[in-house]
Image (cartoon, rainbow, N blue to C red; front, side, top):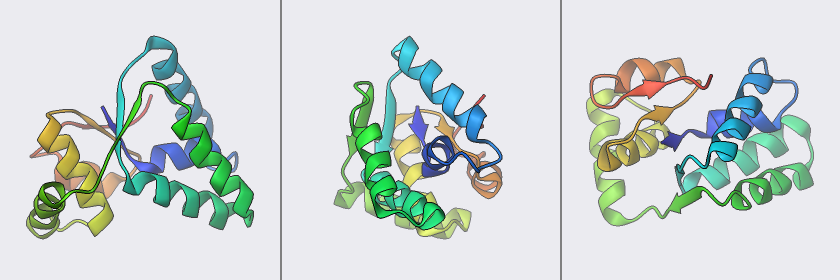
Length: 134
């Protein structure tokens, strides 16, 4: 499954409303050996979100190291084809650019997208299966 930065960030930030759900969901997927996929953009998004929310640069870097240590996590580069598809979907589905990248990857791979973002769930639902962690 494709996992949005909102889920990774929530798992790392104890103040988030959905922190425990995200953390437990992530750990359950890891224990079960479920393949998790992200675009390389997710690493940047999580580093920034965690550092911004905590005011701690090291926490942002630590969150990325935690992600990179997960054996079942595969990171996809932002190649030309993925970006062309994301660009088309951003316009077609009226999505923010970064959100369109996750939807494009889910669409290309035929995998569900896991996100807390209700706008993404609503707008991408006609094209890909979109679920919340839990």
